[in-house]
Length: 83
Image (cartoon, rainbow, N blue to C red; front, top):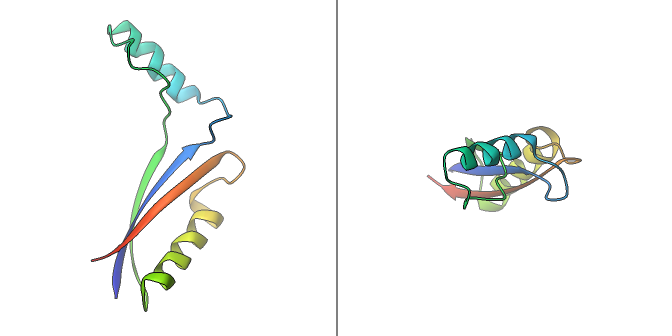
């Protein structure tokens, strides 16, 4: 079966996010200072083939842990759906 994974990778909450802080500062310059606690991450989509949903999730988990996310600095979450 064919699946699509939607993966969100974000900096860990306890770590400084310099990109997020820069965006937050500039939002204030645009009189949008009510928007706070900006965190910048990345969204990854990928397609894969697997025998079933469980196998697809195992493959995506492995990709996240070994390549897509820096486990020291980032957390990730994903959704796998049949397409």
